[in-house]
Image (cartoon, rainbow, N blue to C red; front, side, top):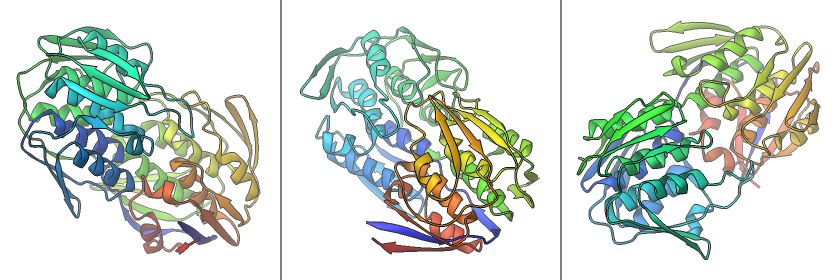
Length: 417
């Protein structure tokens, strides 16, 4: 198991390039199960989660090959219909194979994902939608078994906004007989990216990016050939990295159109932005002003940037308030930030962050993906040396982050624990 050792206090200066989005890549990989043929995805990041999804596709009979940022999937007739617990437990996005499998083959058996570190994250909305599309569901032994001769279009009102639920049902409905409507659908850019890829392959999806998505089912789809959108959360994380170290970074391929809420809060804190033809230059020269943040579904402030902004606010000139409305356990990084000298008080789903003059290096432990990024950011600004253990979380969602930061002037090294 690896750890990162970071010596803080160095302003980041230089250029970093944003990789393809993890949260767009994983559903696109599952979408290859909808049709036979050789699918091609471009701008795919080299991440632990991508490799896990490739293993899952392989268990279902697909042949997956990645060279650089190009990934090909040959989804010839599948040998299996089961997503085993051993893979689903390590990556909840594995449940996204449920809709495509039952839509194409009429049958799927997928492990229930269970809980995860940041909250329960049930799949009840996925199952409700599949039942409306005509699936017969049997839940036993920790697995969901779904069967249907052919899915039929339906009008589905989701009880809450769910990104993976929207994606799963959108994929399933693309091969259903007749039209389907998803109401209270997730509006995230990754949902739009998936819809664009499916439409290019022959699907008929309208309204992606709004709360109501209409899918006119088709008899079959061609192979996907799609370039994955840039990772907005990675871009946001590097924006904070530039600001928290009082440096200046040129962030190439930053999707500013998908980061309005994050950029707005960083500007409110005093961070400067200069858009360029291929990205943005982010800089800061002083301690940030305090801000109030309330997380919410897109286009609100993303829960996946909450921990990173908290690290930044730990060095603000006053007190900031951060309210988490998406996941019930997403303040686990607070205990580790306190080890670095942060002053954070938690009351229910709200954190009061009192700015400090400095943070100091210490041994800390990552608890989840975004908590890992939070600790890296805090360590970059802290005085002295910080050891961050369990960085396999970080490798799930940030491609070569240690190398990218080192190239921008950070003192980061990876060691075996």
